[in-house]
Length: 394
Ligand code: ATP
Ligand code: MG
Image 1 (cartoon, protein in one colour):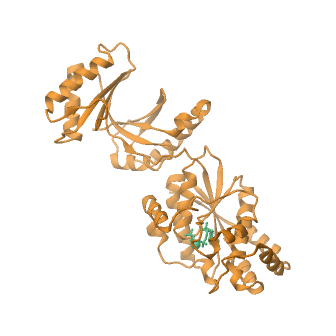
Image 2: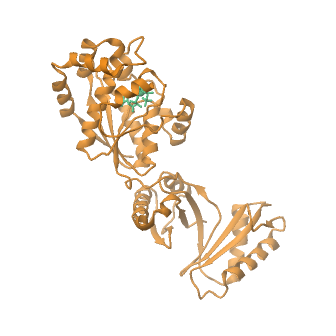
Image 3: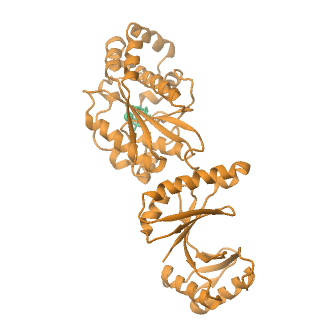
């Protein structure tokens, strides 16, 4: 029945002179998403709106599902587009449309007509009135409410066709990916970091990722799980360049030379340093982590001072004020939860002390890091040199 979609975008509509850049980016992302769907589509921008028109048969659910992954889309309106065969025929079409989409409907409604084709024989007001009457006649249980209608029937008389739509399927919101620069996500196999990446990407930011693995203490399977998570996130962000860094020797060396209760903090500091190095080499403007205040010992505010101070780039922590349950809800919504909870070994937990410090003193941490002076630079260099790049896309 539906052959087109009107795409509503909220925030990007207010970007003034740069608006076309945002619209073009959105169209680009929509094209990318639709490429993976059955069927041919054309996308055009007119008067601050974007229309998708199907050129062939397509699977409605598949297309809507894909559009729901495109940041920048606030709403997706399925449209029926008909030829102009006179107003009586149009009334019939609308009455049939209501029977199909709202069977047994008793809701309040309003008709909202727009004409971009000015030579159409009826003006908008007349279309509103006459179409409203036709609907009331066909469905006496429905009522007009011009102030707060439950259903708004939009009728747009355009150059070539007449468009009818009323449903708005919510989109993901946010800004089109790529309009906000790029950032490096520290991606582990847990619940939090994929959600953190999703949230920053939602603001228009392209995502690269880095994963620290520690073979043989962490398995190939644990690494595959991170690749799988990156793939799930890439449904929203587009392809992700995932850097896999072998962290084993660094971790062992810290284990050998530093107090065990500071191990996690010192390890996290090296992760941040290495992530920042790769970020800068790849034009990333910030780092992203899944940290949330107080979630574990390494995420108290004191611990965050210690992990934060080793980098220059801003560290974005979109989950900082979220409870675990709230994070879980987002991960379920975006489809990463099931993969995140699969059992795996985390390089942070393997050597973890029974009583890690919760209030690390930065000066003490720095002093203990001096124990690493002999070999650490070389180990970091080797880790960077053996960076394995995996390009992950759906
Ligand atoms: P997550 O659920 O994201 O794994 P977590 O609750 O397990 O988070 P930590 O292990 O303390 O928390 O890690 C905090 C953050 O540090 C993670 O959200 C992630 O951004 C980053 N991180 C931790 N371990 C790794 C790793 N092995 N590789 C890359 N980043 C990591
Ligand atoms: Mg973790």
